Length: 108
Image 1 (tube, rainbow, N blue to C red):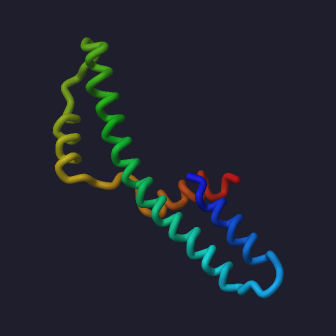
Image 2 (cartoon, rainbow, N blue to C red; image 1 turned 90 degrees about the vertical axis):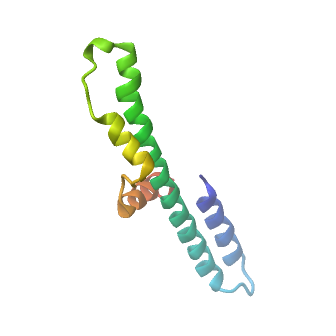
């Protein structure tokens, strides 16, 4: 996802091109970057919940199919079924925001 750097570049180009450009363009750019960050946090939280479910399948089902001798009887199928019936978010909003800010917005 590379919209925020493009958005910032476009807004800064328009705001500082000279002449009679209004300063509210900077506020519009700030609002745009904030909206992109909020959308990205929401998307990341959904991705993280799905990733946790897939990882549970990898650790328990696929690994036990390849090496059935070390397969303990576990409660993971019931836990996975409960999570699929009533999905829960695995990462907090602020943690997701800090991860996305660090990874996408401040990694330039």
